[in-house]
Image (cartoon, rainbow, N blue to C red; front, side):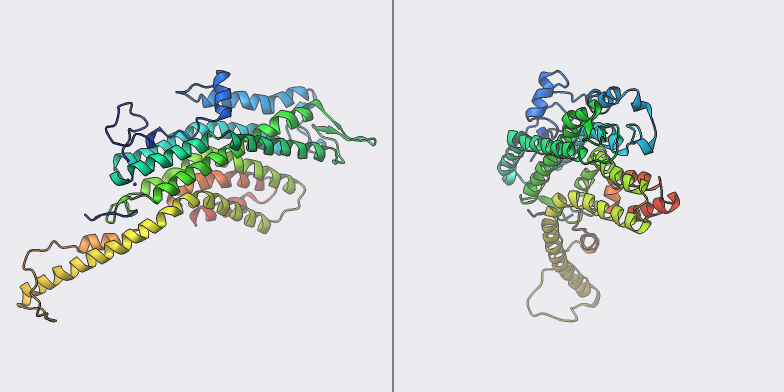
Amino acid sequence: MVVMSVNGVTHPSPDNDAVDKSPSPGLADFRASHGGPFFELQAQLKLLRENTLRSGTRAILFVALAWGVPFLLGIPRSFSLDHSQNAYLADPGVWAKFFIGIGAFILAEQQVERGLRARLAQFVRAPIIAPTATTQATRDLSEALRRRDSRGAELACLAAAIFAAALSYFNFHTLDVSSWAVEHRPEGNRITAAGWWSISVSLPLFVFLFLRGMWRHFVWAQLLRRIARLDLRLVATHPDGKGGLAFLAQYPNAYVFFVFGMSSAIAAAIAKNLLQESLSMTTFSMVMTGWLAIVIALFAYPLSAFTPPLSRLKQNGLALLGAQATRYHRAAERKSVGRNIFEDPTPEPADDIPDPNKLYEATQKLKTMLISREAVVPVAAAALIPFAVAGATKLPYKEVFSVMKKLLLL
């Protein structure tokens, strides 16, 4: 088997408390959902601990604050399901952002942390990162942790959340119909208690959790791109067909909950347009296709950094094995017919040369793109299902789910 150092540190598995004897103690300690001011605040409030995120409990609490409190503040009108009166329970945006979105973002923290640590642990087990790159890998990890814990980043997320709340406040004053959040009056709109809570707590919490999750994915993406520039011990003939990196292509599925929450909020806006019958099937299909492309691009960005080293691996592997194949077959030719058909006066070694044919064929099949349909079907489904549900409220459900099926098969 041909092993090539192309451009890959040994650490303990995230599920193993044993101390690894590798010279670089770091990668497997990366915890995507730990650290930062918001994490510290929750720890001080005993909502989580260092060794457990308690995602289920926190999801219930945050959903209760964001969705439950406005519901209670709006009683008895909160029990209405009348779309024409813009009732609380009939508002798809309320369900998508304050119930599904916030709950999904919190639940995603545990899933993301486990998924990403499992990917880094495989870098350790192989090991894929060359010993000479251990020091640089440790520096890259330290930089990623510094960015993850950045107070400036979380303050920027908070500022954006406050800005979104301000926009919501001004939007309520421009509405020309009454709803659960605002009472339309000739002298001016009056925001209800439920509306004030959504402006002050629910919407900022949704926006903050979304932007915080996106920032931490960016930190992970930059860490992967830095790892891709290290000296990696890739294998041209690895049975996974991707140089030994196929495990990394599975990381987007750690974001299934996060993508589902994000897609639900966008699909809710589409649903509002559908209720007004202002969206055609063609436009709806284009929206689904465009959104899926955005989601795939989000995860393809960090994985694309591994295309150059995989391309060099394939190119160098084919050149090396091609040269060996020439020597092997010239030797076989001499053995069979007594001489080479195209003879060379330069003496050639008579040593037995291993047959490289199977290795050459395996190297030819090496894929240089880590992203693939098979690897992202779960996260793609999470991106499309909310849109399909929204579309089925008004458009023919068979056509809607046919479009989703075709997109998943692309």
